[in-house]
Image: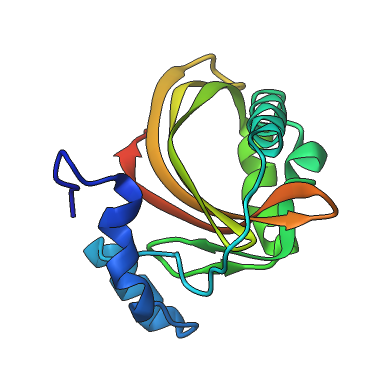
Length: 173
């Protein structure tokens, strides 16, 4: 579903938030159909622009440095990463997914935040990740351009990933 020019990315996905389920089959089907919004259970309070800037900076440094420990410091314990094959639940499962990726590639990406909205204690964020990844073994360079929808949650004064969905884009995977 593409937003109309006068409609924000976030507004485009919000009406569908009642369709999210913990049932992996239902969730996977929704992702595959591209009819997913991850804005459920949001309440009202503002994250500061300073917190957002700190999150973006920490994410960029951890990702480009292939620093799995710093990257995992940005992840809440109860994180859910929605993938076409089904959700990846929990911080350790996410570490298991990203650690081999960081070990395989040299990453040079930027995070282009298109839109944010604070709803309660959660921050709903639409962003593009763009740049390159270089296969460490062969030196092969591949472009990255991925649209993400994230919900961040405050934890000990810092924003952390809570829900993650890859909306679309291109990589060699």
